[in-house]
Length: 236
Image 1 (cartoon, one colour):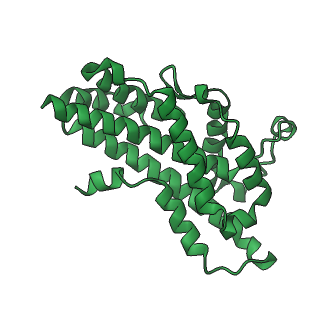
Image 2: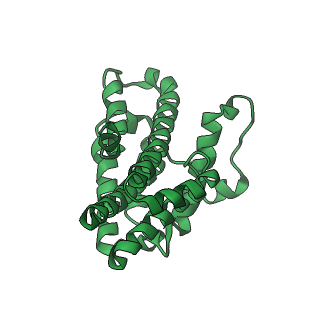
């Protein structure tokens, strides 16, 4: 099934395609004017990729579990673009709720699994961008990302029934705000200067951190998808 093939395609392939497309660009200061366009385009493609994947995951599971289908259709009116944290948490709760009905012991992702996904997500970003022009264009952001990734708190990932919490939650909110501004092109006609709070906290947005969070969420949902579909097949 094409739908299943798409679900099984990791979001890192979108980043790999972008790096491959930019491999023909000769480095140097003359290439910097296109860097913001490339980063925005990649960012929007990744957010769109993830939104569509969540839809596919829901429809795929709903094809086999009719109670899930009922719950999903009942909640569908609350889901807008599957892009906000509220939307993602609704889907997250529904899938974990389904898993719980089959096997309560598998309704939580273990600390070891979360640590593995965080480490793999970090390695994905570094292995894809490290020797590319995309890391050259934003050297300071890239170095800041590596320092930030080394200090990620696992308690902020898939803990207490929520997808993200704490600082991870806040970074996603900043990312979501920027996603909307990029998608609706408001930056072209509004003076969206960073707030004094974001300046004092050193938060002005970091594409690599956003790419990482999207990659991590992709891994988390794929983990839940695999567990849910395996339990459904075993119960048939």
